[in-house]
Every structure is written in C-alpha cells, then in structure tokens.
Amino acid sequence: MREEANISYEDKIDYAFEYIHQLYDQPLQFGIILGTGLGQLINNIEIKLEIPYEEIPFFPISTVESHKGKLIVGQLSGKSVVAMQGRFHYYEGYSMKEVTFPVRVMKKLGIQYLFVSNAAGGLNPEYEIGDLMIINDHIDLFPENPLRGKNLNQYGVRFPDMSEPYDLSLVEKGLQIAKDNKLKIHQGVYAAVQGPNLETKAEYKYLRTIGGDAIGMSTIPEVIVARHMEVPVFAISAITDLCYPGKIKKVKLEEVLAGAAKAEPGMSLIIRELVREINN
Ligand code: HPA
Image 1 (spheres, protein in one colour):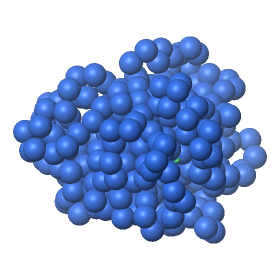
Image 2 (image 1 turned 180 degrees about the vertical axis):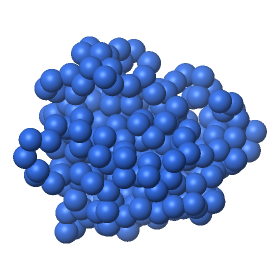
Image 3 (image 1 turned 30 degrees about the vertical axis):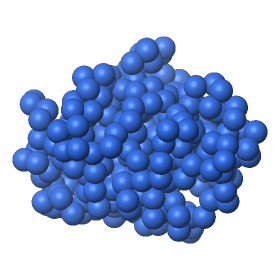
C-alpha cells in the first residue's frame, strides 16, 4: 500500500472506491476472488471493464514475484460481478489490512455476496487430486487478524460473530448444483496457515487431528472481513495435492496447477450456476 501520510485506512478505501466508481457507476452484486490456477471463470464473464491493480489508488502494490493482477467488472449469468484476477497472499509480505483491502472496496461497490476459490491440500483421506470441496467452516491459524486494531465502525462491529462464516443455504445450493451436474463434491473444513513453506508430515497429522479437511494459505482473511461487513460468503477449494499418510510427497507448483486445472471446470460451473440462482 502506498505510504501517503495522514490518510486513514477508511479514506484509502473510499479513494479506491471512487476511482472504480467513476469508471463504472452501476451497482455490482457479486464479488469473486479467484485462487491459484483457478482463473478460467473469467472466460465466462462478459467483460465491461478491466482495471490493473496498480491503477487503483491505494490498492496493494504487487511484489516483484507475484503476478500483476486486475479487477474485472462485467456480467456473469446475467448478474453484475466484480472479480479479482489475482489475490494478495499474506506470505507475499502484505499485511492483513492489505490482503483484505479489496474486499472492503468491493463492499463499497455494492456486493451482496462474496465468492472465493482456492487451491488446497487434502487432509481428509477420502479426497483425491482434482476433487472439489465446498467450505462449510474454517480454522484460522494465521498469526495476524485483519480486524486487529481500531474497529472500522462504519463497516461492522468490534466482535463479529463467526458461528456461520459460510452461508449454509449457499453450501446446500452448491451441493445440489454439483449433484444435478454429476460432479464429485465434498463439503468440509478449510484450515489456513501463513506459508509459504508446505507442511511437515507431523503438521499434516496435527491439522487433520484438529478437524481440517483441507489446508491452504489464503481465503480466511477475506472471509473474516466479508463477515465483519455481514456479506454472505460461498467458498470452494480445489484439492491439488494429498496430505494424509501414504499419499504425502513433495509438492511441486506444477502439480498444484495441474490439480487446479482438473478441478476448475466443475468449480466454474458451480459458481456460474449459483450466481444464476441467487435472486436479488
Ligand atoms: N498446504 C498448504 N497450502 C496448500 C497446499 C498444501 O498442501 N496445497 C495447496 N495449497
């Protein structure tokens, strides 16, 4: 985030919002954040506007290693959406306030739902590479919380409830869409760590023991901030590698991308159909 003095976080959100709003002033109903290797959904969007992140005031600046991302505004299944092509990960060095800044801006743009995808390791021994898991709960193992510090009272309360972070009616709808389309589907608990290293065998065992079905390095910060603003969330993991005894091997990025590519068509279908079904 650019280091201008004397500009509050809330004002930075407002500046970013104003910039996007003057380029496109229609309300946007759905926010979408696409995970590693899961960007194909963009091909289903009738694109009206693309804004590189670096053009948006106060948007986090991409690190050298990370891909240059952009915000995509358009129509998906007849609804207006704003999608992030490329997200900010904590392991890249961003603060949690930076990681979740776009979610605040999307809320200002009018989103009534947030959809999130990610690539994750499978801790549940029933999972296979390329499977999809609709997230029905999470375990936050990040060392920092995006809501730490002064509460942004205009966005939400100091102690937001987290008893149902993932909207259960959306989980049910997602499961039904998968069933109707004969897609293999799971629902389960997503645990997230800061990364960037993968986990040890003992850590995988621990993560399974505490109740995780999948493990990744993203999503939870954005979900916490969305829930702070009472935005309903639907999130889904592509299982890209297996993390239970007998199946653990060295994880290569190419294999994660191959697993994501296998899961991607089903994931896009579920998101497209859910967006179509939700009436607002
Ligand atoms: N661990 C953590 N994050 C991941 C993994 C994993 O096994 N696979 C994809 N993202």
